[in-house]
Image: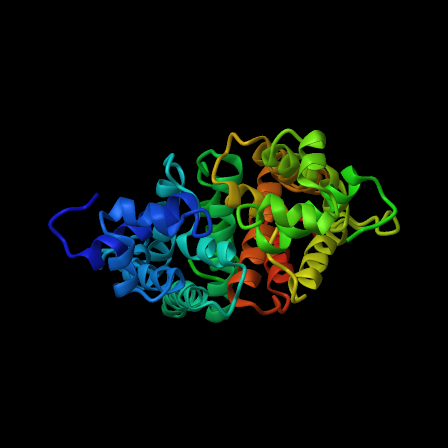
Length: 187
Length: 187
């Protein structure tokens, strides 16, 4: 239980944690409230429904999740900046607590593309694709938009592989991204 | 409700259907039994636990799921045989009822790599990777095992994209697989 913070922040933190670890559907309101140290009554004063909490938790944790894969400004070469994302993925995918991409998991758990949280998840995934497109454009890729979608596919497919096989990626995502960068003429 | 079949088969069919549509966690035993037209008492005589049903349903439906992506023997060119898998994926990924790869979904829903059904899911995913490796070897790929893992990543990442964006793939998985085949020297 997080202490010293407001009930709303504690609920958002517990939700982000439990939804990622156990899944949105598997995590009941009871358990969320216990983890956050907040009564159910207080929770429903802050969030009208569990669905709203699912959405708001993703809005709150999404930016940091997105940023955690990006290189810092010291790296200026677009190809290296792109490959950094896959190296960062390989690192987290090798950790025991990795359960896949938070955004894909949310959409998959909900099984409802119109759910407000699924729309938030889609926006964050699109943010990564847009970032790839900008870097691919700076690198002079023949078709930056296509390369960006391909790199996103490699990102999500690699995350799925790490979940399925419960092992690290052993460089597979970096190698695959590099092959597609080569194919797109990004040296 | 499926009629004219044994309770066990009706339960396996309902489980495969509901677990795929709504998710393993979201589907309770009550609903499964109603859909199968089987009493809970009968269900627990046939399957000791829901977990066992989750596993047995995947064992039952997995082979057909796997086969549904493969080309028939009329197509003998390895590159075309491999690309057929992605064309088949694009077709199902464009359907409204597509919720992703059945095997990845099961592993992701369960969040437990040691769950018997997660192990079954992993075996089926490995079966696809092995199939890619055999075809890649026949096609003279430089490193058939690596190419096979890359193609599996493209398969699963494309499925995730279709779920996230709730749209068809517009050829993205075929284009990406083709780029990796080119890179591996498979003409």
